[in-house]
Length: 225
Image 1: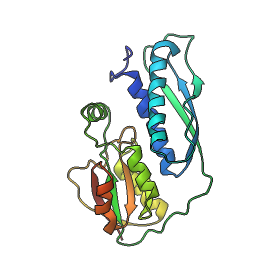
Image 2 (image 1 turned 120 degrees about the vertical axis):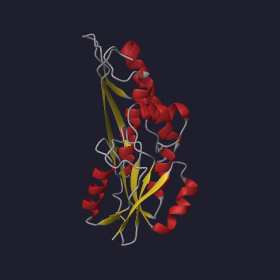
Image 3 (image 1 turned 90 degrees about the horizontal axis):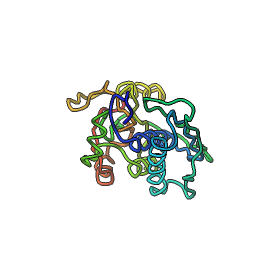
């Protein structure tokens, strides 16, 4: 809500979405979050405390999803700007995680499906989804189901470069090719803001079962060749 912020939104939402993004990226890699550090470019009393409240909300949601036996501690550490008045909101979050047992990437086979969970959203669209409970943004429960599902070969959250960029990354990482279906309702080059959706490679015959366990929209994007 600062003077020079382009989109006016409560600081708690900024902290929540930024922390959630870091958690989603870490968890998709099957890494256990261990320490979260914030670097706030605002004062502690006022904007800083509201941002931290949002960060704590994201941690609480992650803990409630029970990814691991041990929870991530709420008592986060970090710094604020107490010397110079600021007119724009700025923050950074560093999240460290640990892989205790490196996971074996599951084999990707011809005929496997490439799906998108959630929709790419950015800016006001993210706020609209939260305010209207549209449930078109991937959440921790869905992410947990995907990471634990043996039918899922790979999982990749979408960032600001969009679905198409991450699709190419997915193909390159797995050294595979795919037939991309034409999807009129998915803007493949659009930013997904704070990781509002994710790509997954999954056995095609398990998609219907996936839809019964994940409440966000699932879009079939293509097929491995």
